[in-house]
Amino acid sequence: MPLKVLFVSSEVFPLIKTGGLADVSGSLPSALKSLGVDIRILIPGYSAVLNQLNDLQYIASIHNLPVIGDAELLLGTIAGSLIKVIVIKSASLYERDGGPYSDVKGNEWQDNPIRFGILSKVAALLSGSETPIKDWQPKIVHCNDWQTGLTPAYMKLVENTKAKSIISIHNMAFQGCYSPDFVSTLGLPEAGFTIEGFEYHGQLSFLKAGIFYAAAITTVSPRYAKEIQTAAFGFGLEGLLAKRGDEIKGILNGIETDEWNPETDPYLIKNYSASKIAGKKQVKSALQQQCGLNIDADAPLLGVVSRLTHQKGLDMLLPNMQRLLDAGCQFVLLGGGEAALEIAFQAIATQNPGRASVTIGYNEPLSHQIMAGCDMFVMPSRFEPCGLNQLYGLAYGTPPIVNATGGLADSVIDTNPASIKNKTANGFVMVEASADGLLACITRALDVFRNDAKTWQKIQKNGMSQNLSWDKSALEYLALYQTLMQTI
Image 1 (cartoon, rainbow, N blue to C red):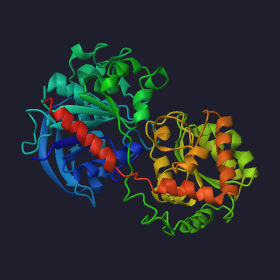
Image 2: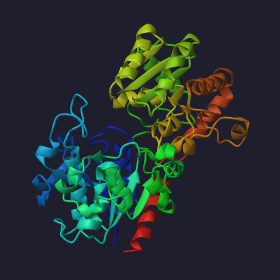
Image 3: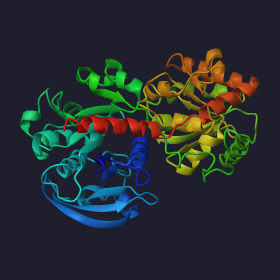
Image 4: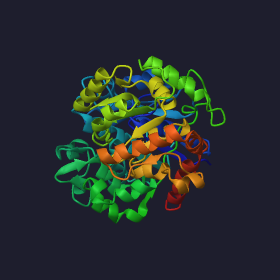
């Protein structure tokens, strides 16, 4: 009988997306299904989700939920996919203008602890003896990030389920810490509000609950699994994480190769491959034209697709921008975030017409075109649990320029004589996370790009020839599931 797994997430591509969590939640379940896992996704019923799912039908009602009382469960499928999605329909909680976490002005929803407490509660209910879905009950509940962090606590302390829980940490920086009043509001036992539970500096911590009570913990890269056990990356929970260190497994994310493939990408004016890489030049020319840049095949085109936050390290790029542009580089950015960074990058574009382009916001076609049309991809994150954009860069023959942290260090091999010789060089890695360190790394990349076309093409092909799909990672998750099943 196939193993039944409930995959719980606050966002899933292509239904709704704010970041990499959505990409993982959209592609990992598909990879697991191809391995024979009977997997279903549980997601809040945002308006965008309800509008996009196919064959949506009512399957059950849930009563006596904290705060809201009743909710309906609907079942549908993602277009072009066989993955079944369970939706929590509660208009008062989820059907609003704005995003999954904030309103149209970017202000966080004040009732987020209720919205994601209910998501966690429903996930736990579906795995327990009182499940409202009688014909499908999971043996594994796979939770993702703080929004689902209360699920293992509910499973262990309230529902007393036999199913096993996993919490996957995509970013330790976001922990879901709220007033202790929500302990009783959400129907959690007061006995759990201790240091040996979900209490964190006088607050209820969703993520700590997941880390403390889950049967297994994963992170999205091997290096990040070790980094979060240190003060530099643990964000105050490094002690608990170190205590469970032997149980934390780092599994590097893959990418959805049906969505991210330069040979088939519908957003590109010309498709190309490692063996026919010349087509990339046409994509570059089209991108230059689209973004108002000078059409110049020889100008090194640097690309960024990113949230503009301190974590992503792009403030280290700002002091170098004018120097790089004056040296003949071009620059294209797509992203949004901190107002000061948005304004600073927009000013650079205004002052450098034909050489710099900045688009604030989210644009899926443009993100593909930047990834394919640029010569190199700049991603100097101060910390990066896994990162997907550097993997997209590798797949598209756009060598990444990265900081040596987390999944960036696990996936990008610095270009040097040894790595060129053994055919592993696929990008450029900063020696230190600083403006000077970033400039030195970009300068090294520019030197190869301008002066050694043969080596540059080798670097491109090394990245493009890697298997970046979910195949290997999905097998690792399946092995973890099977190990947990032995303890039931």
